[in-house]
Amino acid sequence: MPRPTHRADAAAEARIASAVAFAAHFRKGPLETYRVEAASLADARAAADRLNAEHGKNGRRAMVYAITREGVAIPVPAAYPA
Image (cartoon, rainbow, N blue to C red; front, side, top):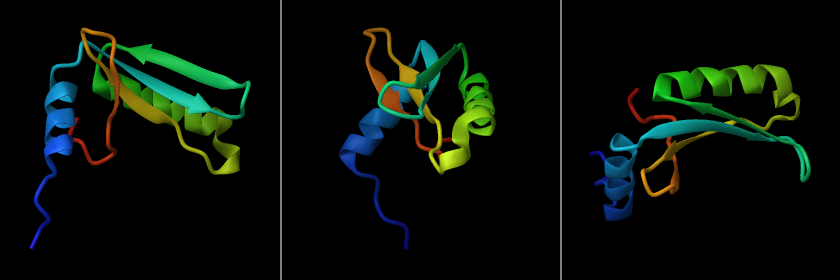
């Protein structure tokens, strides 16, 4: 039986659906970060794949964020549908 969705997760998914932009972010170290902004979730995921290929040699992975109209960044789960 699948676990029920937590209220906070449901609220985050609703905000992701209404995002105005997306961003892929990769942090290689304390002073070395890379950020690529994208207009769609698919573009942001493609940018995250590129960042992982270029800089992901240490086991870290790029994160994808949804940006709301208010400027709030919400992490997009890997399982979130494109």
